[in-house]
Image (cartoon, rainbow, N blue to C red; front, top):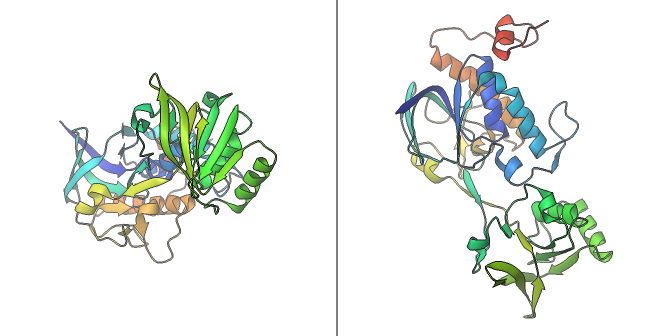
Length: 342
């Protein structure tokens, strides 16, 4: 069975979700595909509780709140979500792109929007015996519910923003918390480093630097300890209930590299009028694209989505002038949004 759509969006992060909205305002129905099992991209996967301060008119919101608000905003347009699937093949031309996913679905899309961030990504995992078998039970690469770690013995691996953010967030919930980092310098915000060292000085976090996890100890198929080896060769086993590893994401262009698109250092060059790639009818927004002056900000991606939507409308309805209308006054917009306009 082939699913026909006017717009297929690859990537369900904030920019991909807002692309649904901008297309919907123009009367374009969209399907959206993402390799992750949930919408939100990195905001959901890595930073659901991390505050964001640079979304216009929203002084502060968490990544999870931003995604929830975007989902609420696109409700009137009823996008069809295809989650946990990777786009494996793309062929054809403007008006008739043939797209296949890892789930065996086939799409016939008039336009395609690549909003895949840095491409498909997976967390960098712990490469130790037993880690795979314990994943999501006692070895974690994300936090979905902090309450799960109440009164538990925690070990966190990593030295970036995610590791420090969660160490600081969980320190007062856990029975004990140890952060292990392979260096003495951190890749996190300076204020977070100051807070981490202060918490360590107060005895609320144990900090082990210049060290790595070298083995996992188990009993009855459960994690009981993490072996830590320092740069000096000292070995210590830390009793643990849960191990959280935040080594960042491993970005991969994956099949995108095989779609015949011009590339620039694993990104897709676009023009700044239409945000179209080197293949007509295929657009790229968000972190995946490249143009002079590009800034990898969510708000920049929102702007790109708006202009790409207008360009797509012109392709879907060739020869028909695309009028700029305002949501404050346009009866057509009000009808599409499901509001009275009063």
